[in-house]
Length: 152
Image 1 (cartoon, rainbow, N blue to C red):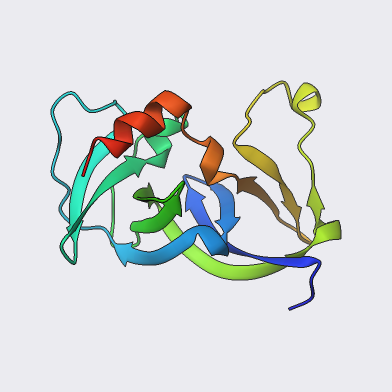
Image 2: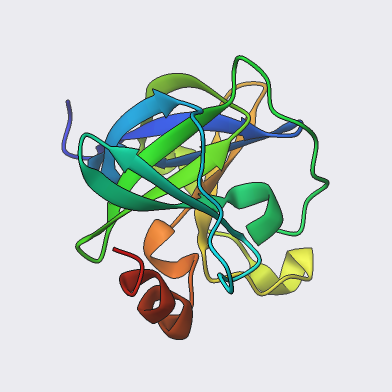
C-alpha cells in the first residue's frame, strides 16, 4: 500500500455511505442482544458481552439524529478502539474495505455546507460515489467519553 493511501471500512446509515479508518477497527460482528442501561446517554444503546469483555454500544443513527429504522440481518456492530476504550457502533451494514489515495480525499468546507461537524474529517471522492469520512475520536465529546469509561 502506497504511503499516500489509507484503508477505510465503508458502511451505510440509511442511504448514505460513511467510512472510518481501518486502523481504529478491531472487528466487525453481527448484531447481538444488547443489554439496556438505566440513565445511559440517549445514543448509548446499551452494552454487550464480547468474549468476557463488557463493551458499550452506540447507535450511530441516534448519535447523528438520523431517522431510526429497525435492524435486519445486515445490521452490524463495528468494534473500535477509541482513546484506549473499546466501543461498538451500530451501522446498517458494512459494505467493503477500500483504499483511498490522499488526492481522493477532500477536506470538508464547513462554511460551504452549513454544518460545523468536527467528527467529519473529509469526503472520499470516487467515480460515482462520495463517502463521508468520520473521525471516531471526535464523535463523542470529552464528557461523553468520560461517561462511557464508567461503563465497564
